[in-house]
Length: 180
Image 1: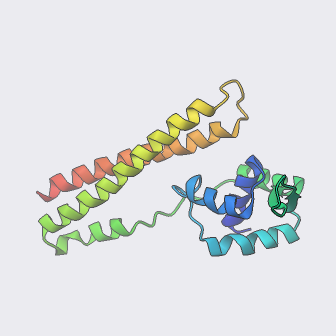
Image 2 (image 1 turned 120 degrees about the horizontal axis):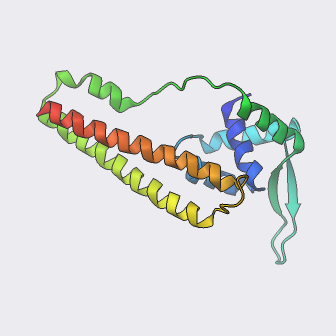
Image 3 (image 1 turned 60 degrees about the vertical axis):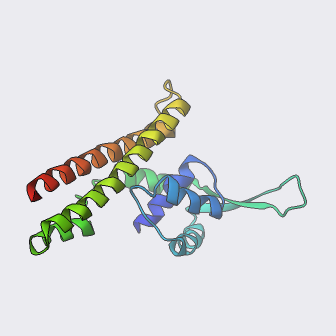
């Protein structure tokens, strides 16, 4: 099964969501560490529904609007997600265009490369600040007595992001020193 399916099941295991909400959460909750295009989401959800992993529910609204369509994970979908979560994972392959640029930095003017490194460092500093803000936000919401609160695992993933960004920033600083 493709990884987009596991990403979608991961979101739906936390709460039922409309297609629009799924797209938003793919960008906000999963976006920092896992990307999927909008054009992938709906076709994959249709296949997942046909396979019984998710189901579409219509929720009546109290206004003149039509029923809101919400996707919900099924017991089969939850079992598939649990099984995948406990499978041995593969070592992740890093694909970072900037690393390739640094690999070629020996052929460009060091001062120009330092500017590029500074720009990348700034982007990582911004992302670090966003992660730290997200951790504060989630920590305020988490039920510390409940280890099964999905926010506990969300915080862990964001903490990884914080450590990654700090490492990337340190690496940029080290790289700029070497080029001076």
